[in-house]
Amino acid sequence: MRTDPMRNNPAMSRPPLYVTRPYLPPLEEFTPLLREIWDSRVLTNGGPFHQRLEAALAEYLGVPHVALFNNGTVALMVALQALQVQGEVITTPYTFVATPHALLWNKLTPVFVDIDPRTGNLDPALIEEAISERTAAILPVHCYGEPCDTAAIAEVARRRRLPVIYDAAHAFGVQRDGRSLLLEGDLSVLSFHATKTFHTFEGGAVVCHDAAMKRRIDDLKNFGFRNQITVIEAGLNGKMNEMQAAFGLLMLNHIDELRERRAAMVAQYDALLAGVPGIARLARDASARAANGYYPVLIEPGFGLHRDEVHRRLEAKGIFTRRYFYPLVSDMPMYRDLPSAHPLRLPRARALADSVLCLPLHAEPGDDAERVVNALRELAGVCA
Ligand code: T4K
Image: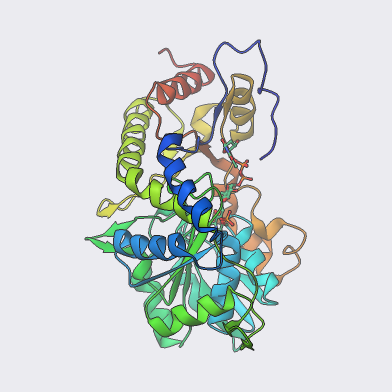
């Protein structure tokens, strides 16, 4: 976590407000679980809490198999290994760096394809023309938890015989018509980082459809051990430990309430922002049970200030918005020389990255949405 000038700044009338605030259940609810770990001395390597959390998450999310990981990035790296992907992978430039980094760590070449400007997700209509004889997979991101056009992606993938791995880091609990979004594609990858609604401090998971794949992923995240003396693959150490898994079980007791409280804050923002000119929102699938992990807005010319200036002036008021996802990953030094990273090929992703601002969103009661929108109204010169 980066430090900021507002921490310990006595001049501020209100405490700093960050893009999110991790929920922590009452400590006394965690201590009995810690006691169990202390008594058993099983600290990691697929212990009882790990097994219980995998089963509980599979049930909560409505998916057949969940393989837990120590974070979402390693889960992504292993997902790509599990499908033995080699060559080029079609993906989005509008994402967190972990998405393309997982490709580079697997010696795969990202091929960036522009987004649908309404949602921020990979535009399926552009995937086909980016497919070459080296294309080995498609790696879309459900950005901010908004579902990708999975039907269109599945159609291209089926026709071109390509596996689809969804980076679902933002899509915990998202459903459409009662069906988990995590059932789409071959594999889906979750992040349980501290900044996520459901978190285990650090953590992640791969969701898969069958037991054989789950077994393979479990081997890969444990050095490739099949048993004490047999190593079947060059695996890595991606295991979630018992303390994290126990915390995850505890979080599951609270998750529905947390999701409701976040949904309430989203509804508050929606209502309060309605009268502020120059602020737009991305499209939301009305049929989806939303993730509500982020509240992205677009600062348009009608607002009167550039997004970066809004970001800076809000910081001066102790409100720490984030420009997720600026800069585009395709502009970063390790990607920018790729032919697909050429700025002229990605105009919509660039436009979105230049105007987006994620407003603070969390599950705590209070008037934070009002505080943020009042600050925005002030900047826009709109009377409250
Ligand atoms: N794919 C996608 C699409 C992703 O967005 C991510 C992660 C991944 C893959 C990889 O998953 P993991 O390997 O992380 O499981 C944050 C998160 O670290 C990252 O998990 C997340 N996406 C990304 C979008 O955001 P930063 O560098 O912006 O976080 P940071 O430390 O600046 O935190 C933001 C604010 O949250 C802070 O200003 C204050 C608050 N905070 C944060 C932490 C860590 C707290 O109050 N307490 C805390 O402990 O990356």
